[in-house]
Image (cartoon, rainbow, N blue to C red; front, side, top):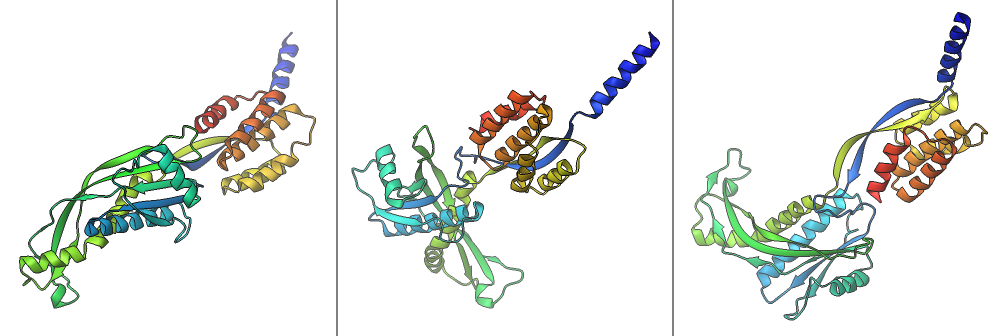
Length: 310
């Protein structure tokens, strides 16, 4: 009886040693922006409205340029890849209307369009001058900060969003033009300089507005299955440097086996790779195949992540 128990334990150990092991991968995953819109991998355009107020129109133009520039930086699409267009504002136009935004989307030929409505500017105020410790020249040795309050509205429409919803954004803030002088300028001169610096301040404001549309990043851990074999180890090496396509090539080779457990592990790993590459539907299909061959303990957590992304 004792011998049978010992043999049973040895058999169990052998079975464990032949099973798959788990390898953890730590990655920074991209999530939609604070504004709730996903812009990664999409083409974007920005449209601003003009009206009879030349100063407000110039402010809006500069703000749109800064906004577009920041989106190009965030999504690595290259300078000029987020085009900026202008359009005359009609007094009876409904710029929050889905049909209006859809027509703009068709005209610009992009996946997502942002429309900056005309801004409402307040009264410009200029602070007193403060001496700069390490001024470049005497005529710029003093700095005054100006304050231009404004109200704005912005709308966006995403052709790839299944809800086909116009998103509305807006609020109040202030632009802060910088005024440099020799410290002897009167209030009128400082006002004129502040107005000249207003477009630059509006451009910076556009960049600040883009913060709500930048991707959010979260540190996450994912698991891969592997066996004690050179090919499996090589695939993990590639995954560690985020060469998901290279790792997937090896896992596709490893599908050529009659061992359902090994095939299931390879299919599960391919599902992880598809997920990392942003193809969530294909990831789901590979995970279905894995579950069919041999339901792995890792499957449920990955499926929840895939479904959350769809």
